[in-house]
Image (cartoon, rainbow, N blue to C red):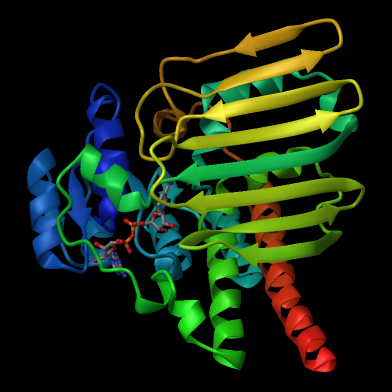
Length: 356
Ligand SMILES: NC(=O)c1ccc[n+]([C@@H]2O[C@H](COP(=O)([O-])OP(=O)(O)OC[C@H]3O[C@@H](n4cnc5c(N)ncnc54)[C@H](O)[C@@H]3O)[C@@H](O)[C@H]2O)c1
């Protein structure tokens, strides 16, 4: 396989996962626009390196392509990998920045027959998959969903995992207190960007899970949306008749926690996920009814390893590829929440102006 983009996610998440899967997958080529990063990361796994997408795609040793570059390059690189006739493509989330890009990807996947996996790792976590097989009619009765993420900032986990080369410093606007220093329209724009970034960058991990319990996913109404310092959000919304709470805080926590709950009239599901970047087995799921609690997991591997195993299966021509329509709907749901959350900032500003 070959990897486009060799930043912290490739170095701290994917290469450690792939190191455990050498019997089925081998990294042959690493590309990054920064030659020093490409060379150093490729050397760790004895792969070729380059700074050009075309060169990696033309390499006959590369059968599977993983796209781990920044968001804005994902769609064009997924499309190029499909056109290059590769056997399967993994794209980090979000796989596209808007509905048009997502539709173009679905079309190329259908035309070329190249299966695409999006790196929403929890959808490949054996704990989630076991819950899905066991929950029976739960989705029909769920009225409330909570996704709650409390994590240290990514660099802390990255540094536990490996020695990162070429880390990009965070933009000034992402630092604590930057909003407080800005005022008026600039502060509103910063708040909107942080909300949108929070949904598209972090909440998006579990929105495919939320959507399984919110069939009316197009009827999104955001009731409340606010950022949390230094990074995070509190968003309360409705999708049809289902109430959804999305919370995240990235701070100096010593106790990471990533939970998902779907609560119905007389049954519920709660899942504790291992934090992102952590390679310590799968999530543990609990399905509760009045009569019993079923505990599923933890299993031996996590969702990152799950997505690579799926990819290897697809490249061998076995296994079922995720349906492109599912991927598009997941993205539409995330974009609708991000837009509606940002619109809440406008509504708040208009209210303050009217009051003044
Ligand atoms: N699954 C997860 O748990 C998880 C966690 C964090 C981030 N991510 C996603 O992974 C992706 C990468 O994240 P990161 O933190 O490593 O990002 P990053 O921006 O820090 O690093 C990306 C790397 O891509 C390189 N790059 C820039 N332009 C490129 C191009 N056109 N083609 C190829 N490479 C290019 C950069 O030089 C850098 O080395 C993002 O899409 C992000 O959303 C996933």
